[in-house]
Image (cartoon, rainbow, N blue to C red; front, top):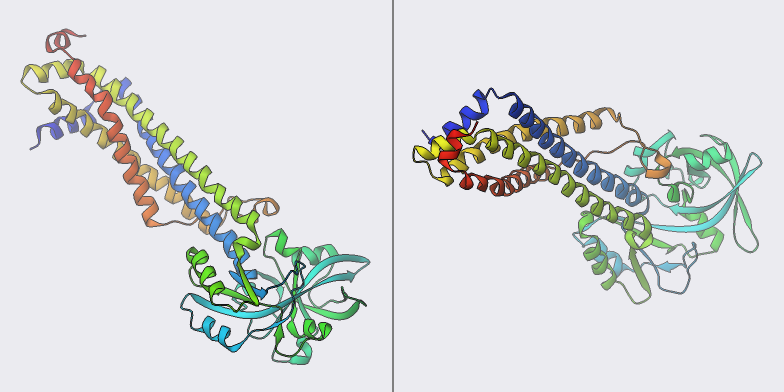
Length: 406
């Protein structure tokens, strides 16, 4: 039997000292709370970033291709997407799907209210998977009926509330051009993305509307939106797409299109690192305090062990084994608390957020096994490494004085 481990077990389990027991419980609680907060912090931040990215990506794609010119308006200049460029996109293994689009500024008029908007025209190749998840009323545009599809429109709940509209209502839209043109549309669906810049900025309609209003040729479009398979490779894939385009076209990523949102998401990583460091410091301080008190309360025992021939390193191992035992209990409880609260939030969404400020109606949770494992590992390594310093106090204990110490 390992001598140091045996003594450490007796101290941890059989100890009857009231004061040290209280300090030990406080230390365990400190490690538990620190680990739980770190687990939840990582899970919430990652969940938050994923949800916001998915919201923006789902509506606007990851990369957009437009004509290369000096036009900085919301209405892109027309171009023909040549067969060679189309083939390169189809053969790109990093591209999930893509579709043509065009935008045109317009003004909505209904119930004595008006609202400026960007009409986003799409066609039957548009991927509806994301929009379907966020439709709160109605359905999507049915492109199987080409005549009906020319009058069907999807608007956001933000716009619907502003104009007091609902699914099935008709209204007039005035397209900004010289002279202005008006069209009558019917609302077939209302969606709620939750990102104000998108909800109040766009409506979805038929691409052929924009083509007719602008007198474009049948094969001309305003742009191409691309969804990639792995968002982590966005910069690399965006550069690759740009390099394979003809000189008349340009591409830009969603991060370039919405720099404020992604800069803000990047700053969340800094806040997370600061919080992790602070929580780790709290746990370490609690364990150092507990170890020092245990050493002081066990001065007699240290003197006796030295008198029986135990060296300083052997006695240090006893107290480090004891500390590791306490840290282990704290980690188990911390994992139960952190993961438990996280799974409860995933299931019930009990903790709500102001969607107008945070783009989400609840605090999102995204667990990764490697994150939890590394947090546990780092906590153990850092705590035990730091605890070596106070354990050196054992070498200063004189056997004779310690035995006489009351």
